[in-house]
Length: 458
Image (cartoon, rainbow, N blue to C red):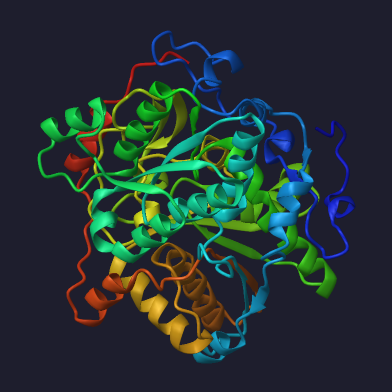
């Protein structure tokens, strides 16, 4: 760990790949609330977390003060296969929208996993291997995280057990087969393989599952099998730390061409890509060195930021994980089976939740059909078929660009293109056939989830 706060440019190698991750929490005046033991409601210690997570990852999870963590050489060598990822100006989209705004996107889909998830997957797998573990367990929604982790585990010779949200398991069979090709076992969740899975199925027969359900199953398997640990693709502080490589590269590229983004937009499910993209920019904002308008975009069907409560809640549906203070819809909330599987988590990163609560960023929710309209226009103009998750950011970026057309403002708009949608063709088929619908939970629907929030004294 590096104790002093050195400018990020110090940590760029000759290929302009960051050699250290940036810990945004080090610059936060109000730190994220600590994880709590669900039984005692006391802050969790490192000793309590090590049976679940790898030892080095626990240190990263709990460290609120160290600004930069050097990236191990083995991870840097892996990154060089696909990093730095391109920062692209969307000239063709600008022309189609007839906007004076300049639109840029950071493209994280230029690897076989098809998304930004590989940035943290290789890090977490590396620390598991370094600790001498046999394997890891995890959950996956759309399948991007599971794919990335299966690739990382194959590279390092680790066993990989994936619990995939049932609706995505059925909607995306080819994503499932990529994971299996890399050696992972893939189980639809909730399943009959775990006690918590059987309990959820008994209480919710025929459920299509959720990330909260899959997390519960993966944690149970990890804690009951010696030599295994649980790893998570979003939400956690350690994941946002690893994903900061996205923002660090982006800022370096902008500095090189003398451009400063005015608006930064990312899709928001658990917070990994958004937190990674905004990290160095938010750091400047927190230190009073620059100002940016930062927008989180989430599905209207799972509106954690825009309609959730800022409270302590379980990170999983089975209520076996630590309590996190976050914007949440309640761990019992089962979102509708929309096609942005990676955004179906009931809560949000504690770091991003605190920043949103303190007014450093905005949030908006968008409906599914509107998202796919934006995805189709982007594909036709820029030539990349975007993931449904990424398309939430595209929708907001297009809306901001159209607003600039109305006002005549020449804003620089940056959004994160977190991955490709080539395994999401069932969703595109539904949209093209006019069969896609929008679902927005009622206040009564949300009240059910809120009713299950644990009572925790501040």
